[in-house]
Image 1 (spheres, one colour):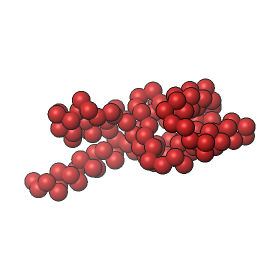
Image 2 (tube, helix red, strand yellow):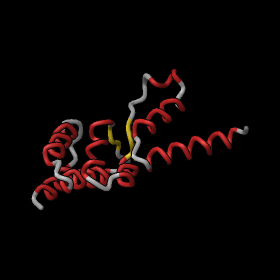
Image 3 (cartoon, rainbow, N blue to C red):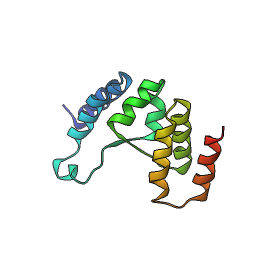
Image 4 (cartoon, one colour):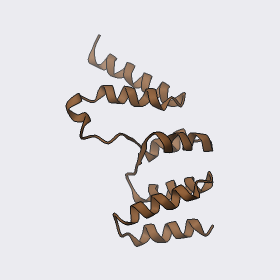
Length: 120
């Protein structure tokens, strides 16, 4: 079996686990792919762009919030995440995330964006 076939099979299994919303299985696959020497320095989580693909209900979002951390590649994604939290009724979670975040960075665009979302 070639390395390319193994990679293809693992990718298929990972996509299948995500499509079935079996996040524990997906994280197990990812964890097994990472060499043990790196595991101690890696914070497990999911990219927001993947969250958007997965979440179609309040329960989906709640499962993600309870099981993993969400990472953002752009600040626009952060505002989308806040909007998603508010849309599905997680107002307190959105405020908590915002309060934790604002202590780490001072970005007026994020502050204004969050305030606009809260006033909708």
